[in-house]
Amino acid sequence: MSKITNDGLTRSVLYSCTHMTTVGVKGLIYRFTSNTLTYLLTCSFVVAPDAPTIVGHVNNSVISVNSSQQKMTLTGWCRHAKPPAVLTWHHNGVNVTSPSTTTNVVASRTRSGLWDTWSVLVIDELKPEMSGDVYTCRCSNEASTSPSDFFVHLHVLGNQPI
Image 1 (cartoon, rainbow, N blue to C red):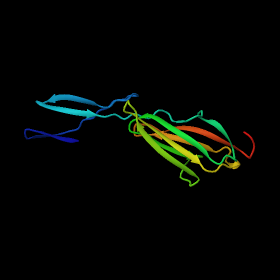
Image 2 (image 1 turned 135 degrees about the horizontal axis):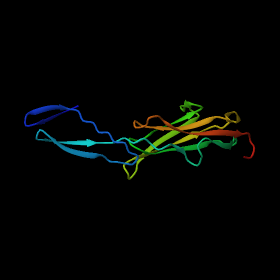
Image 3 (image 1 turned 90 degrees about the vertical axis):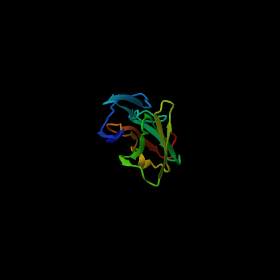
Image 4 (image 1 turned 120 degrees about the vertical axis):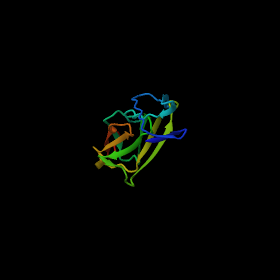
């Protein structure tokens, strides 16, 4: 709700812009006249991110690693969002907050005006009992109807060749 004053007249107005798009739009300015007053209305848009990816892997795939490998790094990527996507990591369905993992989230604006977000998850310790564990990269923003997920399954071998 905004109040527009011109020549002593005050009006309460409520304007709404709705626009569904899958491409970047920086915003539109609408000009219209009502009762000899000219109004400018700026609309900005929200765009849901593309489905996330974990770089170098296929969704729902198995990653085989050797437990002698001390660390494993996963890079998640959420593209083409406005506002920037929130990217979170989950281990077996639980949000990753464990001290045995570290994450870093970075967002950068593209030329289209949309945002790409990526995050690096470092798993500091690999054990054979982690075989079957599922890591999920999840993306969403205020335009998302529900979060999008990308899954990988671990297969951790003992000190054997992969």
